[in-house]
Image (cartoon, rainbow over all chains, first blue to last red; front, side, top):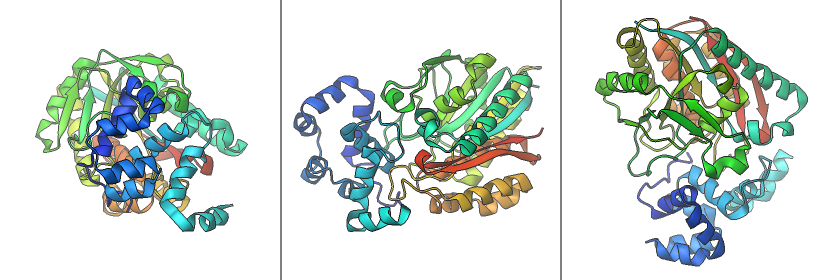
Length: 108
Length: 281
């Protein structure tokens, strides 16, 4: 189950919520992502995972899947009119790893 | 001695307003017709206050301090939340609230053992309220709204029986605590199968959706509670399908009544099975 890894104490959850709720923070994140992730008391593992767009690692560490999808939108954009948006496919590619190509081919 | 005037449930997903046109024509027609029926049911039932029960998508509280249900008691409910505007592409709306009604319902449910909260602040609304408002054009009906945001996705989630019991408490409160003559409608907002942000983000479990809708139309609530459990919903899409718990709140409030399916569509690009039902009172 996708919720099995969820850890409410993982600080990345707060970061993604703040980014959704605070337009100024969002602007700072876009201008200088490092400054923002440096200003939160994240573990080095969390910072590396965000930096490397390693959604799977964040998922395993306990970022809530819904917030994971929102983080993907914060990074890859939010206004694309499609279910298979860049944000959604980047997220799934990370979650599925080497299974991704086969999975997408099976859906085509 | 108020009464329940209408009982409905419908899916929400950003695709319905953000990229409706990505679906084939027959599916668009089915969904358009379902939401038109929702609009007509609210309008013709002379509903004064509509209680909209919908998943809070981790949008109004920290995940480490999460209520089971939050009653929105604001004088006016404005949406959508800024962050969701480019995604949802709905017009800004401001619906009249019903603070007194909401407060009475909130206070009447405090002994359910659930973690209940209420707020007079404007809640952050995403597709949970914005999609039914836009798709069923609720603003034009003039109905006042009490949003009831619930936890369907942050463990521990109040399960099917807890949600049904809350519905029973709400139904009792409507019938015994609210003013004579007030007409209160119920709209569950959420489901059907989807897995937002999980490995099955792009998948819809059409088989589950059709089974669930048939089960509701069949009308045996004990069977629904035994078979359509939170765990079963999670199997069909983790963190998303369980938004159907909002439908169970409505069912608890009205008890066993005949139910009609207003339509269903499974469109991959919408990333969520979309359906709607109306119960006959």
